[in-house]
Length: 138
Image (cartoon, rainbow, N blue to C red; front, side, top):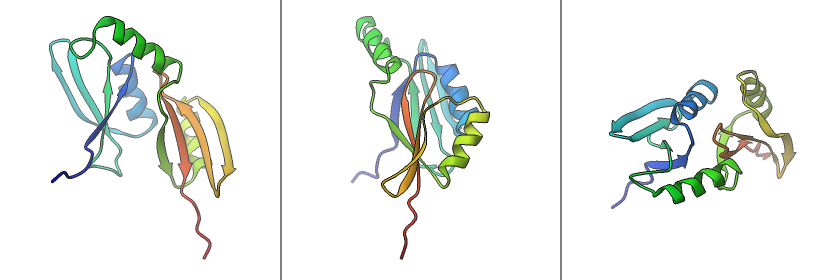
């Protein structure tokens, strides 16, 4: 019987840049940083989700041939990969804090569907939506 998803990976063009972004700007923590020759297994965890790892992987050998790696890097850089979602308690406050740390937003916080959301991208081009938890009126 499975116990759920443990790791979801992102393609990044530079693992060191990605690591700095996710740790210094988003507050994630390094979980694994293991090298096997040219291959590097690098994962981070959000402090409030210790059972879930976000893998920061570089397209290329031994997993991909060079043509496939180039295609993947181009798709990520164009923002063509599906966006990830970061849940926050206060979208506007989180946006302001992250902006001070150098995060560039692709969408300013806006109210819609009973919540507030904003958009940003990591250094490789992966898109993120930051969504404030809905306030339930009872």
